[in-house]
Length: 228
Image 1: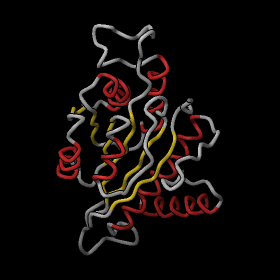
Image 2: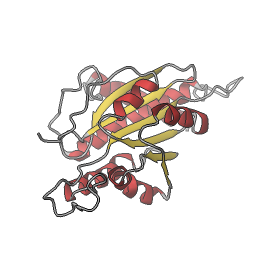
Image 3: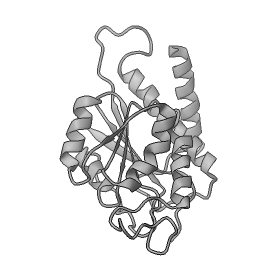
């Protein structure tokens, strides 16, 4: 197991040198024109690299550690997929404040399964709205996991809950255009560009919170590119 991880780190390092790297949070405007599977592969590289790094930090590479060290906590955040608006067949005038996903949104939810289905997810959170729950429901179904609902307006409480209950795990959080950047900042990972409310749904934010409390964020893309 350890030798496999070491080999994987070497492969990843080579790929990074060749330019196969995640999209930096410092340059979120970069939209690579690659198919969804390519985006998924790009995410897999980043995820395995972080996992291997966490194992190395914990002392699992090179022999048994003398003192076990806590692992980093990985938080993967996405905005909900495309929601129905007035005039869309899925839109329900009786519930205008809580619209469901469109067919395009449901396709994006399926893309999330392909991207994160093997990411060793340990917990799934969403806000109380239909569009966030529907975005992550296919992933939860495939993994046989429950979706934990947390109020969209309670950013501080969500961060505290994740760090208290899932430290060292991999947590998926589905939020909104105005809450996802706030959650990232609350973890101490800095700021990311504002998410365009009208059309931007394809960002995937990869936050790593170190045991020491330091955090960083990497921005990736998944599924079909969002279009204005």
